[in-house]
Image 1 (cartoon, rainbow, N blue to C red):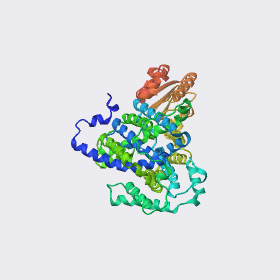
Image 2: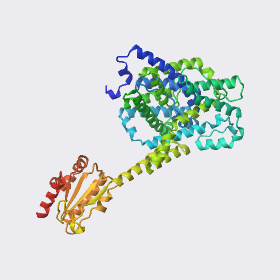
Image 3: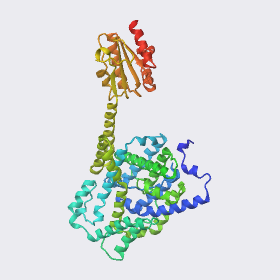
Image 4: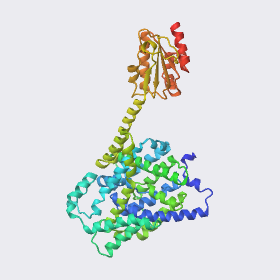
Length: 549
């Protein structure tokens, strides 16, 4: 088996010690306690029931740890998917979500087997920062209703972020101040508690405080039980109703889920590698993400990916092998069966407060501000476009247009780096530069610096000119690392002009990629092997032979 396509568990299990087992078990239990409130909160933000969040952490978490390419990755529901999932559920129902998630899982497995893990690095940092910050804003806006206890009239259920914001302000007269009080106090607990105790997660304490305020103090606030049916049943296998139309309709959603899962999971792996000085297997991780998402969807869960915060918590508590992630999932099974009925008591403003903190932690406002201050204008344009489109429209459009604009601006930037300059001759210049090799006027020399591709191919015709007395044209290409078909066509056009005028083309120092391209296209045979010289002096010697001949 290719080591890059081998689950890390099989590697870690060799020489596995009792001491590490104890550390992994303890870490897995702690991470499960951290994952409990987050899984419930993210499930509700995704428009599904609270148990769906636990199903995701249990099934996907176990499968991704078992098959994964990282030693410490913890997987489960994450905030990045919340808006996407909520939109799919509202428009296409749970069947649509299952189909989209299974298709995304298949795409991830294909990406892994095709060894496309390395391609994720070609997605610009500005795009990932932009859509991550945009998702944070959409989560924040989506929780205004529950945090302020607002009631939407006529059963209004807005989908888009801007529609949610509009609906909130239109119904702001129905604010429940008891809900605001619960939300503010729970938010304060989330901020202050980690400074007091770093072992017990603040989100768990916030849940307890919120329940006490509602059940003991008696504040009139909506709870999970008021809005959702609670079940402590174990995940069960379910096949959706599938049609060709549904598969076609869900493909764009599946593609978005797959790309987002790949990006977030591999970013989490990179962060984890830095913390434990290890190296993950990116392609195997993609396969594991695919298996985990298929399993999650078919057993009642939602899309999952590697969770950076939970992975970091695993590392800090001593987890060093995939066993910790598997223990985390098993622990959540026990919690689901024993404690899930009590989730009905959790106030909705408490869930909103937890998601406010999640949004803040993921918004990356510091990198965002730094990019705006220090990055080139082209990067700032991509960042802002991705950010705004994520909020105003959706993640699919944001990534598509972000990549399109990034590519266009990259091509423009690269085209500005390519220069074509001609040597200056004595009769064309007031002063003779005597440290350069004298060249006969019948020989014209041009140097090309930078890649030759479709964005600059017109420069060949625009900048390379010949005189009536020119007999030989020397093209120096030592600074040309690569060439594409469009630029090669432009060189062929230049060769046509030279043929008509009786001018011989000579090339100097053609690098490996351009030379290989020219050879395959028959360009070297056309010009003549003898007219391709390794150095400029050799090329000039050849040119002098030609004009003397």
